[in-house]
Amino acid sequence: MSNQTITCPLPANLSPLSPNGFNFSISKLPDLTFFAQTVNLPGMTFGDPMQANPFASVAIPGDHITYDTLNVQYLIDSEMKNYLGIYNWLIALGFPQTYTQYTNFVDSQAANVYSELAKNYSDATLQILTPNNGSAALVQFVDLFPVSLDSMTFNTTNSDVQYLVGNATFRYSYYKFL
Image (cartoon, rainbow, N blue to C red; front, side):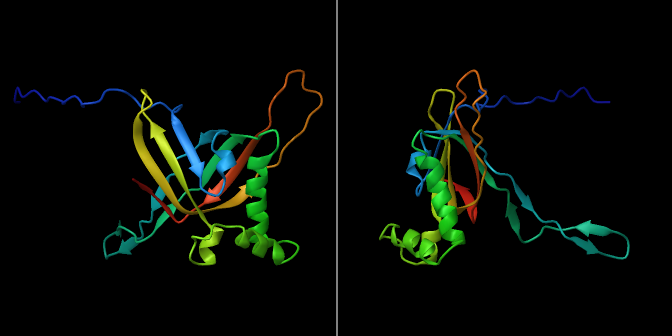
């Protein structure tokens, strides 16, 4: 047996990343930015189909990435602007009563969007901060849209003021680090 010593080099940065430091914004929902409390950096899955041979099935790299949903938890502001922003976006996409719900929403979008389909989406940005409040990473979510908005529960039996917290779930095409 050899007397070799295995050394493990120390990384240049020994500071762990804090989950408390982030900034999050959605272009179509400016009233949500200040009140965002929890945002996840979604996971992703790369398919691994099995290729059969005479001896065993072997996993091979797939050709599609599936992204998990983006979940945002936020304090609902006293005028409900951030909640109503998501609500109105969902109503416009689903137009449950009339088609004008969608056209009114689309007409209110920025004039610099070039296609009607692009008006359904928004980009979002998650800035992950270092312990010194510097930027560790900037993540852009492309073609984001809401898919769910949780209910709000009002309760007169609370002895302390417990502010309402909203939860929304979004889908997107992909995300990238800038």
